[in-house]
Every structure is written in C-alpha cells, then in structure tokens.
Image (cartoon, rainbow, N blue to C red; front, top):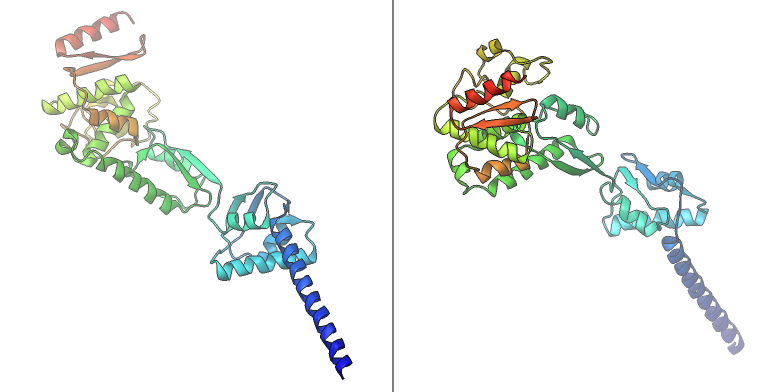
Length: 322
C-alpha cells in the first residue's frame, strides 16, 4: 500500500511537472509568437467595416501556422474584451518588421495614414470642391466666411462634416486671438473676411496686400466707393472668375450688389477664401495715405497714389507708354 502511494505520488509529481513545463513552454511560445516580426503581405492593410479578426490575419499575414493563427486570434479577442481595443476599419500603413502586439496597436487606433490638403487663398467655391472631391464623398459647399485657407492634415477616411467642423473651430480659435484688436472692434468678423477676400483677389504679395488693405480702410473711413475690379468680375462671372477677357468700362456700371463701383461699402459676402497671412495683415492695420491704385502690366505691380490727381497723372503716363 505504501509502495502504491509512493508510485502515485511520483506520477502526480511528474504529471504536475509536465503540466508546468507545458504551461511555461506555451507561455514562452506565445510570447515569441506575439513579439516576432510578422510576414506582412502588403504594407498597406485595408480593413473593411465589420471584418473579422480571422480575415485580418488570413488576408494580411503570410506563413502563419495553425497554432500561431489560434494564438493571435485569442490575443486579439482577449485584448478586445479586457483592454477595450477594438479593431478600426480603414487603411493602415504597417512597417515590414511589425509584431502582432504592434499590429494590434496600429489597427485598434484610427487610420495612421494622414492626408494633407492645401486650401489656397483666393480660391473659389468651385476650386475647393474640386480639391475636396479627391478625399471625400458627398461634399457640400463650404461658405467663404466659415474657414481660413491654409494647409490641413487629416486621417484618411475622415468624415467630411467632421473635417469641416474642425476647420471652423480652427478659424474660431484664430479669431479669438484678436478680440481686442482695433480692427475687430470696428468691423464684424464677416466684414473682416470680406475685406480679406478682396485683398486675396487683388494683392500680389505681402507688401502689395498691406498697401491694398490700407487703401480699403482709408476709402471706407472716407465713405468712398471701394471701386475694386475683383468685385465686378465676381458679379459678372457669378463667382467663377473665368471672365476670359479684359474688364470693360461698361462692366463697371452693372447693377449688382457686389459691384463696388456702384454701391458704397463692402460687398454682402466674401468673394473668395481668405488665408491666414492676409488676416494677419488686416489685424496689423498697416497705415498709409494711399487712396488709389492701378496695375502696371509693364512693371507687374500695383502703383499707389494719395490723391486722385496723382493717380490720374500716373495712369496717363502709364497708358501713354503702352
């Protein structure tokens, strides 16, 4: 009886040791499988909405043994339950030497592929829509006054509405920085965007824009008509700017609310998208005594004057040399 007990005790000890050994071996093997570099078939992994973990593993990882597939499957599902790591759908850029742990970290976060879009100052609605159509479906018109023309980064497969809301928030935060600025106290935010849009369509560079902004402010202060050609072109082309000919004298007489040769003050709305640099110029409130300017094609720049007599003389001199 004693011998049988010893034998049973021996076998129990051997069995326990075997179980522990198997457990340690499985643990080490699992650790190895989770940390070894996976053989990723493509660096760009596309996960469709509702796709199962099994599909992710089978379609994107080469040379997986059955046991490795089971381990990874269990690991991903356990991480989902215990760590709340849900697999996102979308497109993911994956390095060739990624491990299962790294892979889960990548696909359980929003797409790591970042797109960049540059909204060019002076663009029309049509130009922006064309650019947005490269990245989004079901795009809608984005009013000129809602956003600032700039370069923006966003995750691939981002929602259009969310993207625009983000741009609106960025503009709001920018404007809040100038709440105490003298320009902001004199003009509404919409009026500032209108002024900015005119400067965008008229100005050539930063220095030119500064002078044009001063002309606009000076004429508004004196209750003079702005007489800006860009607003007339906007009125004639309905905002498309594809006039394809020279602006004629008769064009300046068209009865349209955006024609600043006919109506005093600013147009009802902006005529293009406005860039941050131009808004900076507006808030700088650059001062000159200029009230007039025209574009000199020979010099490829605007010529500014303080009085109408000076303006007329410079304009006649220019025309006589053409």
